[in-house]
Length: 108
Image 1 (spheres, rainbow, N blue to C red):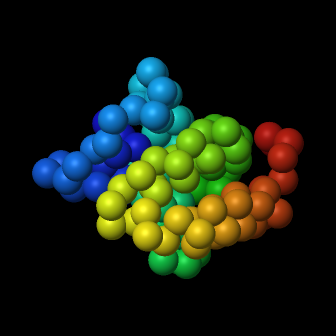
Image 2: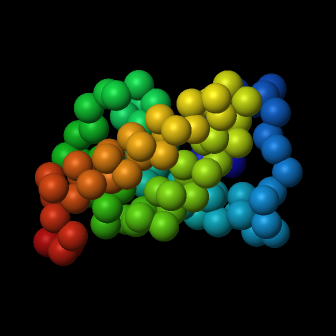
């Protein structure tokens, strides 16, 4: 699963789906943004790294806000990350909004 590989190693625990089809939807989201930009978004949310304009285009125009929010829910379901849920839910929207500021909402 692309989205899972962005945040967990293969041998780590993947919790049960919060609702049927959630992981399939995350897989589709991950395919929209690609591994490189997906990892960049995760690093921006978790570690405060910068995100390139190219990856912002992928995030805003390919993946979209809904997929981004689903990824945030997935992130906090991970034992190593869940303790930082407040930070994830604060930083996640900031990263998305920063990208909107960089690239705009209208695809050019």
